[in-house]
Image (cartoon, rainbow, N blue to C red):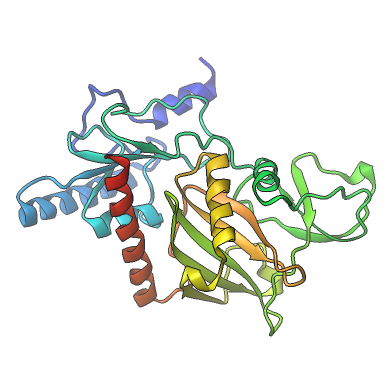
Length: 312
């Protein structure tokens, strides 16, 4: 067995016969971290049992357990659901949660037949893969040939969540091309005051319950660092056609639950989905506590509705 395969087996939950009371945490985590997570989980479960007289319904994830920073963790707690990667008789939904750009070649979670599973078909979220789907749905994309394009070009890693974007001047020499990078149009995502901004769009099974507007400085425009974050009604941001296209894009990428990073070009007015993240943290740092709570409640409401629809 190759080392990578052995490590993968170590880090994924055991078979159905191993039904833990708490969730499985990777042995790669320090022992103290695993113990704290289990104590926290047990405390919450006992509290829920005392309040309701029974174990809470379960929202399954596989193969990874989300961090407390993950939006899904907060949504599950808001709904009063246990979030776990272990077999549960009272599970209502499963979500593939795998924080990798290219996912496992096989997907073999517990309880495959008794509940619906989301994001199962989402195997690849590379920017080059997103580009193909974007052109198919929107009729245009971001990729350009940097050896012939005259003007500013954004070059960044094909991998997701690297945040290494740079602006260069085209054209460039073919010898300078980097095989692990993508070359894209520089989208003019600035407001009337010259601030860079992008939309973080929460997508849940055909619905867009939450849209954040994230303002950034020029120096940090390709990072997660923000100067200000606002919670917006989605009907102020996108047309029905644009929302429909985002739903079709999700379908092309096998996504049921994710967050999209969307830019609107100030010159053409077109929107560009530049990243798709099916394992998002959130709400974004910089959003105040009250608005964060509003966002989580909106997501939880749509999750409840979507769970009912998925299990009909």
